[in-house]
Length: 252
Image 1 (spheres, rainbow, N blue to C red):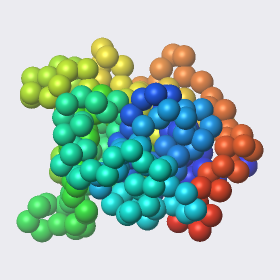
Image 2: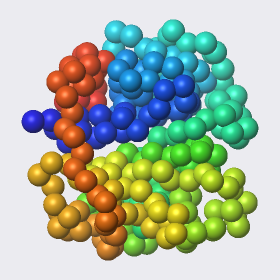
Image 3: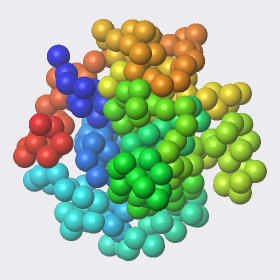
């Protein structure tokens, strides 16, 4: 049986389409994008925050998005401001993000737990997160789920989701038709229906129940009437992601 990490990587990889572009983050997003390129989306264009475009790392998994290995087999050795300008110009379809907290509208906190002045935990901050959440057409949020992380109110808003509901992004000046697309956790996959823009369960992993989902959330989660079970990773998918991460940087 696949581990939670393997399930999350494979599930998010399957969301990526051929001949589209994706802003790749460190860790699981790198493996997900690489897996998609090798199995079902050979024309997927990877864009790394450090400036690499089109890279297909070989030999081992890069430890972060600015490592020189992210440029291998690529087409452009750019810079951080260059790749951010690609997103600003509307050229990047998918963006990967994670977070310490997410609220019902897909807003993310990666800055601080507790008050800004006297934090309980100081987190890494935005990096390029707010840019990716604001400018990529479809944001895929990849994070583990529990009651602390799925919270009705963020300690700090770092990266915008749908803010407080339908139309709020556009009223704030963000590009229309952009925003959170899917949230992938160890329990299931969630979307944001146009009529509510609230986090809604779309798919469950085998052996997981709706009760498990609700028990691991600090707010009530809507369940789509057509929610279904996610097929488990295949042997081919599992073998491939382990070959892409032979040192176990992500796959422990």
